[in-house]
Length: 405
Image (cartoon, rainbow, N blue to C red; front, side, top):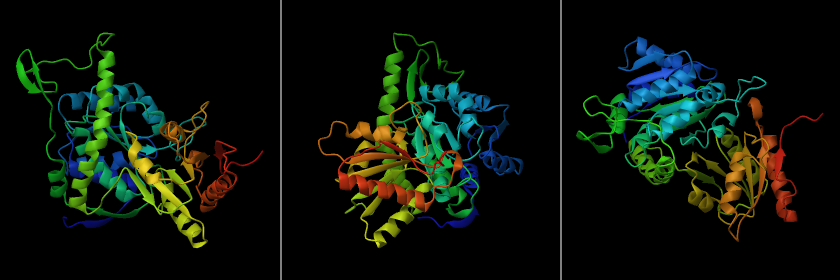
């Protein structure tokens, strides 16, 4: 473990500082609240010549991702950052980045999607991108943001993975809140990420790296019709499955360097729990606090923090859930017209064919940045206690914190 320095950083600054230490070849970004601090801070590192990065101030998020795709295809390390409507504007190119198997890293500062226009946090932006082929990591605090912003490069660039990665942090709650963050020296970060590796391919001019190179011409992103498109999609499926395996190795290496270990799924007081919530992001710190309060009151409460949403860690979730009677899914997103919100639907699918499974209820909270208070979380646990007592889920989805007419 290397010696580290304690810094006071908000979540956006943690992303910018980690990216400065990685020193990617290109950063192409457009400012959007609450992501703007990332771009501002990195532009200062660029202006002060603390990085060798080419900084491209583009005219839109669509152009930002397009620049990253071109740079990454040519062999460069490419980074961008966005939020909500910005992610929606780059939608077309987000899918292209993953389909071309480009290891781009993007920080997404989670914000509600318009309309009506809202600049505060929920998970509607990245949940909408859940089928785009990107790995998605969700962070609880600024320390996790910093660590994930470094480890993401190793995950994305792993020769068995080769997929882009989103590091997701809650807007304002994390992005604008200063916390203690332990940071590694620049050289330790550089040693950890190393040089970008490339898959070796053989073309009509011999063997070479899978990247655009005038000395060994190849084509990326051509017209791909019925003859091969399906097979290329299956390659992405396989890569996601491989990512589950190899991310563990990257996290283990990071633990040796930093002393901080991470898992896809992090259970808390689940050994004897009778009711538990599973969720993602900054609100899980409040859930943990509520679990402690409920335990002091004699309630056998537990919680599960889900750090990884794509690829979905099915086996790790089932192991953490165990044989608990009632599981609540707490989520900052609505899937309009669907039976439940995205995480809930994933879990229902996971358990559909199992004989032994928990009763599962969905609790939607915090849309548009509405505060997720301890009382709201207590309400969810109270609801789960009723489900346990009656043995049935009367209401699949409950919207907690909504004012009456």
